[in-house]
Length: 298
Image: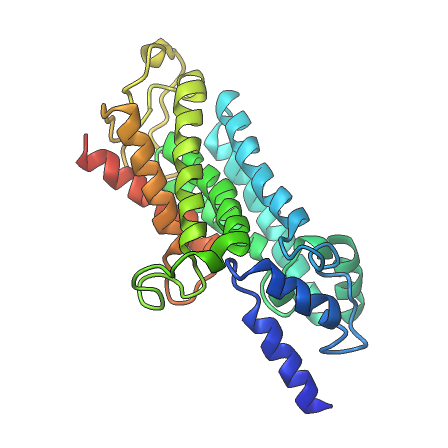
């Protein structure tokens, strides 16, 4: 029995990667679930993932954050207020995670309510939402407002696109160069191309339709602005006392901007840093690459 449990765990571990084919996940998880590892543990997690392998409820929640930050940008919501609210959320979720690890009864109830938003590996690891929130706060603190918003949109939409397309079509495309060294071995060319396309689209959507409306005289790209100088409110250089990268004020063409955003999204999604959760690394990496690209091509 112990050997069977180890085999079950090893199979689950092999199908966890974001770009793993959906058919492999669908074929194994319905038969295993958590009950294959421990029959006494709740089976709430992944009940919506077992048929398609695409984690659709999780993906929908993940993608919704991009629309929320777009709305906050449009409404000129002060960054410092966002940090207060997000920080409070981080505290609550962190406490719940600690409680979950130390109380089987609470863990069972937690998984019944929120299990569809969790991955199999998160049952015994830190909730991915915690890493997501830390990444969002990092971008809001250290990057210009517009690049912070675009970085969060990339995390929200490009990670989802890469995961879905990677699982559906990754088996038909060759592996990325330097996979296992620079890029995570589980990433696929199909997923990276999807991330690049979505990153370019996110930049186009944000700067063409929302950039000027939410600008406070602090846009990083000013190649498509007419309302830039109409802002009459106070200019806040940084939401905190910590140093923040200045807006590059780039005037490159819209096409080059979208190309920079697409490449940044694909690279940030595929790069693996010391095995860290990509919810933690993707947005900060994308923001840094965006800022560097706009600065260099200024």
